[in-house]
Image (tube, rainbow, N blue to C red):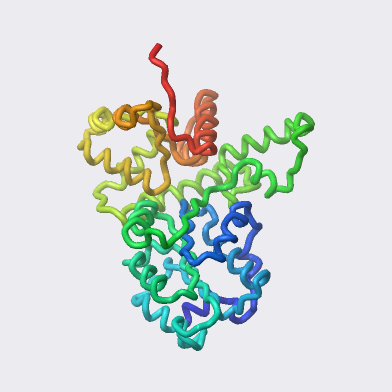
Length: 352
């Protein structure tokens, strides 16, 4: 009971703590209309991109704009371990809502953060969804493969997914109060180019906006995201014998953004089994840490068989793992930025 109270301070205060709300993002406007639909909302994306903040912003919208009773909104983060999911639900109905979901006449809202850490979560959400029409469930998650499997196996047709990413460059400028007219952009060219350089090394992560110390930026991305995903998140989802090898692969990709990868050749260079290397690349992809760009061909089989280009998800990840910079590497980081921004799926290579 104490855990639930700690997470849901609006039961006492009637509002979300301003320190937790942050500044509203553009993606919030896309999400809010789906609150009217019955389907489960799933916000997926990397660590630290702002999924939890978005959940709080949705809750604040319900409280302030829709005037939903605070007691009809429950939030729980599965960063907190619980032994019994059903007991959590029963406690909320019994102690806070004072009625059960089956007989409630008004909609109730359940928010589950880091849902992939709850064992058997797809089946649990499916039961809630199927049994109680007046429930609206909103979740966030960081492990792509777990989320994809859960949606396909248990929640098909029962959810809407949103991929949450860091800020793009225009929104990054907006967050800093930098405005300009497109037809007069030349006037602001120098300021915008300075900000673009900073953006390249922070990649729109809100917590790093305004930070200019390279060492702090590097440590933030290494310790808060990359190392936590590789040494904690991935081993929680897969059987991993050598997380250090995954980190080594990540550093190789960081030093060569857009690297054409052949598993057999890389396995020989690292003196490792080819299947292990292939599996580790898949884990990196499903954890949102790398982006794969395929050779373009009208023949899908050809596209799949050809060597693929690999980029870290954002150039900030590469810069956090690189000790020495060059103009050529900076150019590749810019390429990495555009691949990420455009969500590029294919590259074309002429043989003539």
